[in-house]
Amino acid sequence: MRIIKLALQNLFTRRFTRKKELKVFPEWRGRYEIDKKKCIKCGLCMKYCPAFAIKDFKIIQDRCVKCGLCAFLCPVKAIQVKHELEA
Ligand code: SF4
Ligand code: SF4
Image (cartoon, rainbow, N blue to C red; front, top):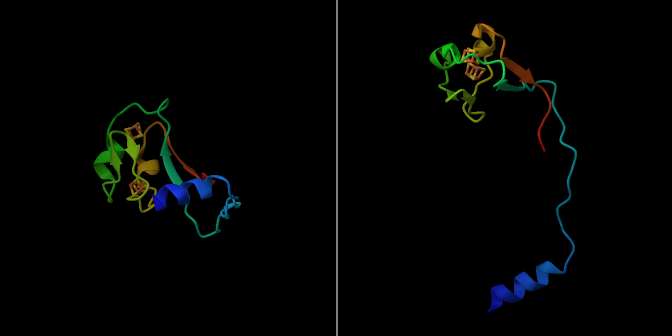
């Protein structure tokens, strides 16, 4: 009963969190992403990624150590580093 009361109270109160602009620090090495349109699925990036961060032609961002080897090896330059943060 108490949780329902709390939920109803929160429905009609203002939000406490606000969207803030995310800052990118100059040291940040970016975010590697595979362009699916360019990728020819040769598998080189998956084979040589030292962190095993590429599965099914997708980069697992939590595993990636930003070494850049995949982008260097890709024969069609389908892997790009992006420096924008996604909110
Ligand atoms: S940048 Fe390095 S660690 Fe990250 S996906 Fe590419 S090869 Fe793997
Ligand atoms: S190396 Fe490039 S072309 Fe080959 S699978 Fe990886 S992203 Fe695709």
